[in-house]
Amino acid sequence: MNSERTIFSQIIDFIPMYEFRKCVSRYKGNYKIKSFSCWDQFLCMAFAQLTYRESLRDIEACMRASQHKLYHMGIRGTVSRNTLAHSNQVRDWRIYADFAHILIEHARQLYKNDELGIKLKQTVYAFDSTTIDLCLSLFPWAKFRKKKGAIKLHTLLDLRGGIPTCVIITHGNVHDVNILDYLFVEPGALYIIDRGYLDFARLYSFTQTSAFFVTRSKRNFNFKRLYSQAVDKSTGIQCDQIILLNNFYQRKDYPEKIRRIRYFDPDKNKRFYFLTNNFTLPALTIAELYRSRWKIELFFKWIKQNLRIKKFYGNSENSVKTQIWIAISVYVIIAIIKKQLNLNLSLYTILQILSVIPFEKITIFQALTNFNYKILYDNNFNQLNLFN
Image (tube, rainbow, N blue to C red):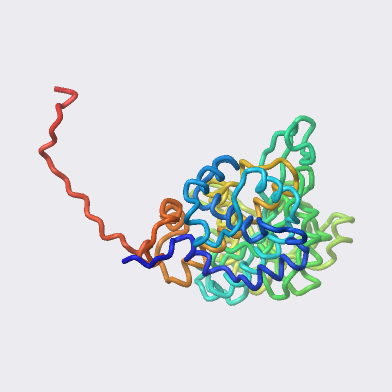
């Protein structure tokens, strides 16, 4: 079946053009631009993410080889390496950051009824960061250590659907715990954070906004046990305690009670100590919630392996942030396609298929569901046996 439209142009149909134009006009992205608009820039960078282009020269060569198809893909301007490099360096990265958040909100509505694996009604977030190493001589603005550059992606991940709801990009030398000040804490939601974010003054802000947190305690944790609750030790829960902080300054930062749970993991042969301000959920559910934090680690691993966020097309801070936000937009667009087409494929499989057929003229649903292939094995191989 020939739909007379390329796969890439059908992917564009899932992008809200009106919302994109609002983001462009908000920052005057097309001011005094005649030929290569912000929309052309976005499509070229999204194409590069989708098809694993290695450099600006690679993007230019690939686009010019299919020059007669660009108009039908939605790209109206002439694709040039210098023009694309200048666009990434000059045009405000906040255009693509705002648009990525619009796509994120759309995807969250699609995935809000997905199963979490734990019977909970409230929203559950995982918050963590990942470091992307950079060469300090090429990226002098990305300060991390004396002879090393890096940036950090601080991400708040909605565990229903694995959609990043908030991404903050900072220099590598910014401590993770400081980013908690920039989070919009949702009342009633549950936040799972690593013990690297253990700051009782900031955790108390979660309690004051009627939100819940689950984290791990450090080794030198000083506390006073008030009383213990009954537990079923066959589940791995060894104790469930209500405590107060014993340290003077910590007690001043967090004056209320905290729940402390000790859990033994037989697979790792290791004890875990959890702290939470939720006193109603079963202790085993708290342990399972913290176990689900691995989803954000998988998210970081996925985007680093499957999107271009470790090698950049430009060295300026603006071009790096532009590339990262467009990469996140591509990830969310694939998630939207998966949900709206009701596909059982993984995001990795969808991305791999779309990466090799952007110029094909078949329906995108047919391309992603045509898996009726059979491998025929013939024992009469016309070759010699190496070991005879």
